[in-house]
Image (cartoon, rainbow, N blue to C red; front, side, top):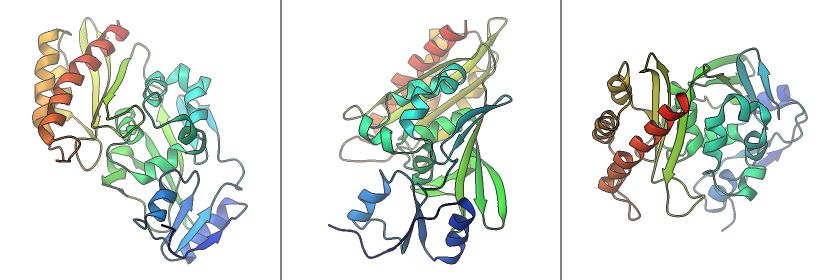
Length: 286
């Protein structure tokens, strides 16, 4: 199939982009188009207008600003994965990118576009939850910051208003001594996850401090597992502790039933993956 009729514009600056978003009803931003264009071809998405931002200069940055890593709206997945700034400061993000799609998609797709697409089985939305990222959202009237915890509201749904654009992602550098791990299971490497688990933690006097655990593919949006984090806090790492945490995590989710992976199977994947990611995160923290 071919997409439904739409208007197309390709402005040269961000103010014009934001003005077009305000003026055009049902407009969508086009950056990499790796998810949007196929959905338009199948007419799952039928925007009235596309605003191509690829000519807007200065939106492809990946940089340190004090203790915060700032990533612009046109930063491609492949550039983020290879970035020394990311590799040195957010190694779990580099690790997670090994699971994201394929090289052709990563070469063109953008982080901000992926986050706005908000597929609940996608890796980066879950990672933004884990990293407690801030989403910088702009419109013709100004800008605001939305915590990742509030940004993803459902399957393909975000907190963006129709006249708003995600212009930047801001991630605080994890504290020194933080251990991490990301793992997932999918039908084929590069597919969306049937279940993905990510963990970060520190060890203080042999006890777990500041644990963060996030999952994807097991609900209508990525989520932090607060109950698991509560069990881990203040405890010494052990296989028994991590098995208990895994069962708690499996009990806390309500996965979808699909022909490819049942809800029971997804729960079992969480029970299997969580001890792995927690054990590796604890080893790396040491």
